[in-house]
Amino acid sequence: MPLHDRGLSQQPLRGPYDAIVVGSGAAGGVACHELTRAGLRVLVLEAGWEPTSPRAGINAPSARIVSTITNGLRHRAIPPMLNTLGMKALSAFGRLRQPVQSRCFAWKLSPGSLVDDRDCPYETAPGTEFNWFRSRQLGGRMTVPGHGRQYYRLAQTDLEGDSYGRPAWPLEHAELDPWYAGIEEQLRLRGGDDLFAFVPASMLSFVHAPTPDEAETIAALRDRSPSLWPILGRYAPPLDWIAMAAKTGRLTAKTGAIVDRVSMDGSGKVTGVRWIDGRTGQRQAAEAPIVFLCASAFESTRILLMSRDPLVRERVGLHSDALGRFAMDHAVASCAGYVAARRADAAAEAEHGRCIYAPAIARTQDPATGERLESPFGMQLHRQPAGRDRSRIDIVGFSPMRPDAENRVQLSARKDRFGIPVLTIACRYGNADRAIAHEMLGSVRQAAEALGLDVEYLSRDIAPPGTGIHECGTARMGADPSTSVLDAHGECWDVKGLYVTDAAALPSLGAQNPTLTIMALTARAAAHAVCGLNARPAEAERAPALALN
Image (tube, rainbow, N blue to C red):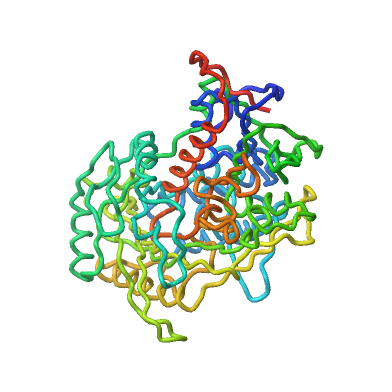
């Protein structure tokens, strides 16, 4: 959405601020909303601009041409073979400046929503591969076209440790319930209310019944595999949390602000952040007694790594050996194809985010040790119209990686265009991860057969880490400051007032999309931060334009 349509205006920065939020995506947006609603004056720093801004580093006319062509290809009833060839040709064009981002399914819909890989590079360690898909824009990846819009709670078992290397979370599931409910109420969540062992109930504003096509799909999947339990998914369009926070009159935004470090005083309290102005290249700084890092899992960790004091020897929190470690993602297997469809169901199919979610439990053995393995995974089946009497079905399976200390991010000697060290990512599937993911791949293939898909694409193997776009870990919460970076509230053990509430904080992954949990944790952390600060009394509600610079 263009900035002027969001009620944004150009004004200079005017402190003092009670809190600074770095990043404006799912976590950053919720942090801004909750902190301003509590009466705090907040500065939000976003590294990007508008998706098609010439300042974003990607040639804006080229981005518009690609998105126009690809949207045309997707919506016209042309033979699948020609569609595939056209998409491959456009992807080759995209590799000129976006060799990594053009591998993302969403690139074809809006190339300008993803970063320029030449300006924002990263490295992978020898023998590893990682697809790091990034977006620098107000709203973050939540506003990238094609975002799945799926919201599921974690189950009690997801927060418990197990013998497979998953650590116990430092909070009880019941502590999250009211924060889940608050976010769901804001989202006006919609979907089915069927339950499964690791899909707890949510607060739904709209309960849907399956359409005839959806009912047939659910029945076919259950008949083919009793271990699957397909239900209607839970979804909602993204909220403009930043615009909502702006209505309080207590939010200031700075775009093009590439934050590279957090400032602290001698007593171990956060004092603010420093950043590079992407427009001018000049260094700037702002002060506040509360800082929320919500820049995305790896970006927040990069800021923490650069903020370390080399003279500090106490290995806790910011200086813990856990910082940068335990990188994870969902392993992905996918399939796409076509089936006959009822024209009466076209409206439901066109509703973006509506899907069938099929959770299951994979049971297999570790090929190296013979250890018995058991892990949940989930498949999402999205339908969309494809001509008069056809539907396209995309099946995407997600299975969680286990936390592994060797999967990590580190600062490289190489610098990006802003002079900031790039990240070196070392992340690979373990034997157990791969065994579980291959069980999931088998289920994806069975689902395609059960539905009688005219298959256009089917995974031959598990996609490289990062493809799930659910990267997490690297600054995890924990109960022990020697083995974690953050406490149960997302506050850094050794830097009071510094919170990390994006996916970096997650100690482990469930089978579900992590977005709802990230948002709930952020709301909970914001309440904790406000309790530790004498917030100003809330002013009378007013709705001026957001101060944007």
